[in-house]
Length: 496
Ligand code: ZN
Image (cartoon, rainbow, N blue to C red; front, side, top):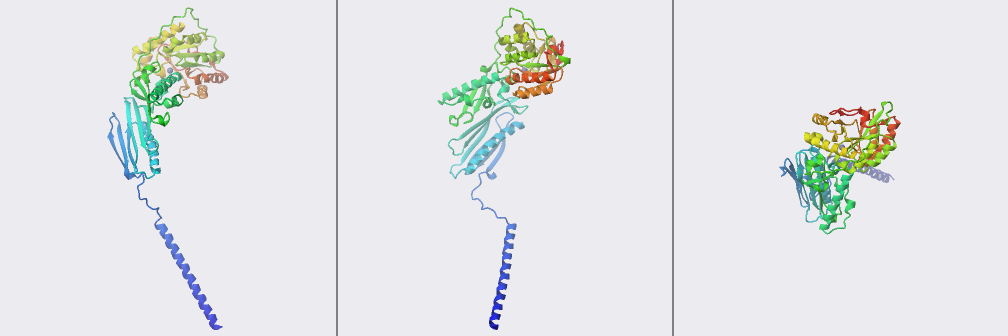
C-alpha cells in the first residue's frame, strides 16, 4: 500500500515536469518563428528568366531627326522575348509631344502585355515605332506615327496615327476647320474620300469593303498635308476597313475642293486655285421696292438685332419662313461668292424687310490682306448684292471679327461701317440647338447684336426657341439699321 502510493507520486511528479518542459519548448519555437518572420519576410521564389519589362533591357538616347527643328528620342529593348525599337518625336511643343508619346506608349503597353502573356516561343516578338513629318512650316506640322508589331498573332499589326497641328495652339486642325466649317463642304470631302477608298480597294482587287459606312467625318477628322495639292489620310491596317484589307491610304486633290478651300487656313496649308469667276446674272427687270422699315416694333426701345453670317445656305429659306411667321426682322451678312447662285434668296430677304450686309467674297481675315485685297473682297461682294437686289450694302461683318485701324480706314474710304456683335452664340462650335438658344437668351440685353450662322441646321432650329424666349421678355427683333440708325463709315459697332 505504501510502496504503491510512493510509486504513484513519482509518476505524477515526472509527468508534471514533462508538461512544463514541453510548454517552454513550444514557447521558444513560436518566438523563434515570429522573430524570423519579423526579421526576414518570406520572398517568392526568384524567377530564373528576366521579366519582359526588366528596365535593364531598355536603352535610350537622343538625336537630331532629319526634320527641321525636331529631335528624336530612341528607345530600344532587346531580350530573348522581345526586340523593340521606338522613335519618339520631340518638337518642343508640349501638347504635340505629349499626344505623340501618349499614342506611342498606349500601343507599347499593349505590346508589352502580349509579350508577358506570350508562351516561350523561340523567336522574340518585335515592335518598331517611328514617325514621319509630311509637312513642316512655321505655323503647321503634319505628323504620322507608324506602329508595327509582330506578336506571333494571325496578322502582324500595322497602325498609323496622324494629325496636322497648328504649332501656335498645339492643337490638331480638324477637317471641318480646314473646309471653313460648313456641313456641305464636309459632305463633299466625305464623298471624295469614299471615292478614293473605292479606287484604292479596286486596285488591290478587294472591292467588297463597306466603304461608305466606315468612312465618316469622325474617321476623316485628322488629316495630313501630303503635298501642296493633296490632302492625305494614311490609315493603318484595320483602322477604317477590316484588318484583312490591309493599310489604306486615302487622298483628295485640292483641285476638287476649290470652292471649299477658299479660306485663310486652307490657303496657308495648300496651294488653292482661285475660285471660278461668277457668271454675271442679269439685273432683275422689275426693280424691287424694299419693304418699309417702320413695320417692326421696338417696345420701349427693348430690341435686339439677330444677325446671320456665312450664308445663304441650305436652311436659309426655311429660316426666312420662321422669321416671317413671327414678324421678326434680322440681318444677313452674306458671302459674296454665294450670291449669284442664290439671288432669289436675297430677293426674298429684301422683300420681307430684312437687311443684307457684306461678309466679303471668300471669307479671309481682312487684317491679313493688302489694301487692294480688302477693296476687292468688299467691292466684288457689294457688286454681287447690287446685281441680285439692286441695293448696295453699307455694313460689313469682317470675317472672324478681325479688324484693325488699317482695315477700318479702308472700309471707311469704301463708305462701309463694321458691325461686330455683343452676343456670340458660338453656334459653329456647339451644334446643339438648345445650347445655342440658351446662350442667345442668357446674354441678350436691350441693344444687343446677336451672332449666329444660318449655314448650320442646328442654328436655324434654335431660332423659334430664341424668338419665343426673348418675346416673353418683351424684346422686339430689328435689323441693324433699325437698331443703330445711320452708321458712320469707318466706325466699328458692337451694339447700341
Ligand atoms: Zn463668317
